[in-house]
Structures are given as C-alpha cells and as structure tokens.
Length: 202
Image (tube, rainbow, N blue to C red):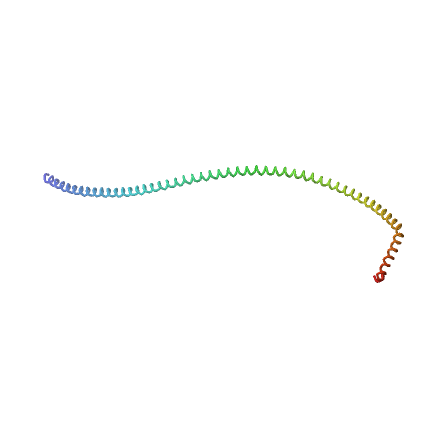
C-alpha cells in the first residue's frame, strides 16, 4: 500500500507542473489576449477619436456655414424689407400722384364742360343774332332797293323833264343862233378873203 502512495505523490507533482505550465500558457494567452484586446480597444478608441475630431470639424464647418447662411438670410431679409418699404413708399407716392392727377383731370373735365356749355350758349345766341341781323339786312336791302328804284324813277322823270325843257329852249333860240352863225361865218369869210386866203382851201 505505501509504495502506491508514493507513486501517487509523484504523479501529483507532474500534474502540478503540467497544471502550472498550462496555467502559464493560459496566463500568457490571457495576457496576449488582453494586450490584443487593449490594442484593439486603443485602435477602436483612436478611430472613435478621429471620427469625433472629424465630426467636430464638420460640426464647426457646418456651424460656420450656418452662421454665414443666417447672416446672408438676415441680409436678404433686411434687403427684402428695404425693397418692400421702398416699393410701398413708391406705391403710396404713385397712388397719391394718381389721385391728385385724377382730381385735376376731373376738375379740367368739369371746367371744359362748363366752357363747352358756355360756348354752346354763346354760339346759339350768336346764331340767333346772326339770323336776326341777316333778316334785318335783307329787309334793309329790300327797302334800299325800293328806295333806289323810286329815286331812279324820280330822277328819270326829272331828267326827262329837264331835257324836254332844254330842247324847248334850244328850239326857241335856234333861229337866232342860226342867224348869228351865218353872220359870223360871212364875217370870217370876208376877213379870209381880205388876207388872200380861200376859205374852201381851209
């Protein structure tokens, strides 16, 4: 029995060595695994940090871009408000000008209508006066023609009477003139003969 116990003790020592060697291998393996896991975690952490830096850089860039866009939007809003204000001002000014022009045109139309009515009344008055004047002229002309015709008749009567009286006087004095003319003719003939002139040659 005792020899068996001694053998059993030997086997236990070998087993212990084996177990120790196995434990060492396992410990080394575990250490390697831990080192690898640590390196892997470090690499993973480095990747995460790199991604975080890139994300932060992208976020900063997006933030700057957002600030630029907000500034542009604010500027565009300000410009839009300014343009809208200017357009509103111009629209109000144009509307006021149109209202003023409309009132002026209405006043001009009213004035022109009044002038037209006045001109029409004056034209109607002038037409009636012209018709009246033409009627009076025609009446006056008729009266003047009648008066001229009456005067012509009277003048003709007077002229004929005067001519008749003149002819009567001429007839009365004709014998005396004829005698005076014969005597005057004889006298001139005698004087020409005294000068040696023949009256027939003259």
